[in-house]
Length: 295
Image (cartoon, rainbow, N blue to C red; front, side, top):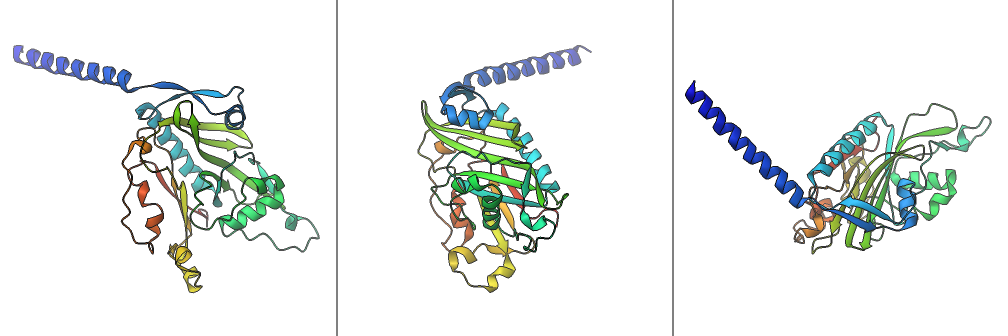
């Protein structure tokens, strides 16, 4: 009995020391900053006035738990979607509708139904249904976003339930806003439903020597498209055996990618990995999502 009591005391003492260490390090490593992102951006992201946000600086493991929950929600939405499209941008997005109308669904109209088999075809369709989107999504997208369009919007659609309308299940947005007060990047990842913010997480990355957190996504096409030769830069992404799919990188609050060492290129130019190999080790939240999950 005395031995058991002694051992229990030792274990309890060790547990108390571990807990004390965790608590002390948590307070030491956790930093909350006031970051200026601009009044227009704050209103666009969160529907709030003012120009600053209070945000944790990476690394922060509490925020990482929020990111994990957010990732799970994204995967759940994708599993219920009929199509998923990723579009790059540099401006703040304001196109978050619940429905997208198309004239081909009107009675008596003989227009062909829109063929939305790529993100770029969806971009063209969006410009017709929501004309102001043309100024936001102003660059053609095929596989890799242009470097001067570092932000991303992900549109998830549902199967058609009403003739002439496409329902939008959810709109996801990923933004890394360059800041000067303090210097770094404010990362914000958000989900909207019918233009209402439903979920989000954010974190601040202090400036460092690492590579930019980009691209936020790449798109792979069906291998059957390789029958048409369009050049190495495009053909190298035609490797999907089934549905085309996206790889999406979500900012990780537990890692500051800008503090990591710059990546030394390894893969040859003919490999699709050469466009995103530098993302290795910069986040734990890599998401693979089919372009057409319900098919």
